[in-house]
Amino acid sequence: MTETYFTITDEKGSINISDDVIAAITRNALSEMDGIAALSNTAGGELSELIGKKPAAKGVRVSFDENAVSIDVTVMVRYGMSITEICKKAQDTVAVAVDSITGVKPQVNVRVAGISFEK
Image 1 (cartoon, rainbow, N blue to C red):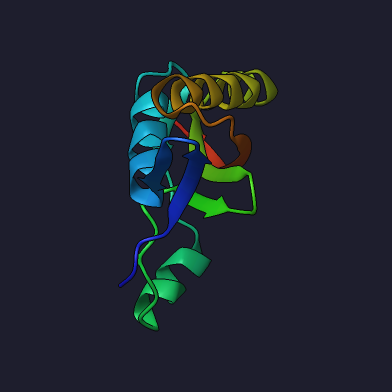
Image 2 (tube, rainbow, N blue to C red):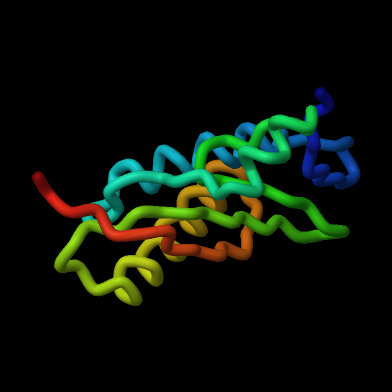
């Protein structure tokens, strides 16, 4: 399995940041949010793992373009919470966390896989 890196270059050299690092920052930021019950895998992620591709971090997919980072998260929202408010807050929370730690401003896409009901 190969890791994917986002590279930042300047006159001093280059910095390579692994997609796993950005995924870990994302998971940590979302774990501290009220309203997010859990991260969720999609069927596509599980299928990719079965055919031998790199397994996605649960509920988080990071992709790199020329000069951009895109983060796709799939979440379960707690019942009774405003889905749009929680998703907007998740976008802001992840973007701020990734930017403050790495200096990279990501695009954050949030997918809601379901609602979590308290037992």
